[in-house]
Length: 179
Image 1 (cartoon, helix red, strand yellow):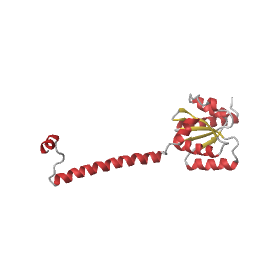
Image 2 (cartoon, helix red, strand yellow):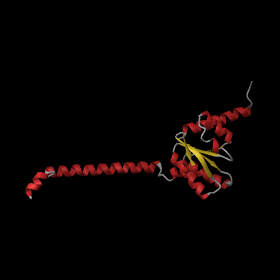
Image 3 (tube, one colour):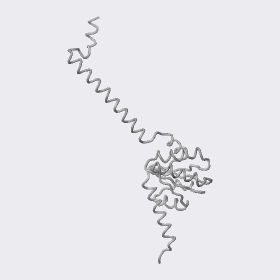
Image 4 (spheres, one colour):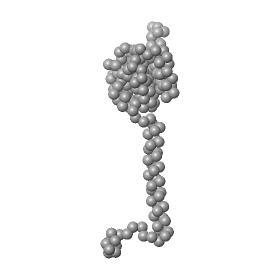
């Protein structure tokens, strides 16, 4: 028995959603009811700029895709109009959506997944306040660089003292005897 073309399209949509859920570091669900076309276009542009995918999908399709991956935590949040944003950078997707939701009350973040684990709206807002991956890497490299610089200065000071014939460190007993 041949499948109807609409069933084939639905199965393809579920498979695509499932791939995005499975391969993305973060997936965020939001209610977009009440956004104007201009606001939605602005949101999509900002998401694209941050390499975040965006898909309006039927709740049953998202639920089926998640359930195929044995993820049921999102089921309770799949009511009303739902948009799914997904990305390899969990901070980016959370930042863009949280910032947009702050200025556009029509958008409401529902819940999501980070590395396959359920996260609440509060968790998403907390992630949105974290520095980006690039900033964190920059800070980490900066701290390594400053530690290395301090080490190099200490080694150089030891080398200079040795070259000048100075003692590196007076022993405590010698200091007491000198007094």
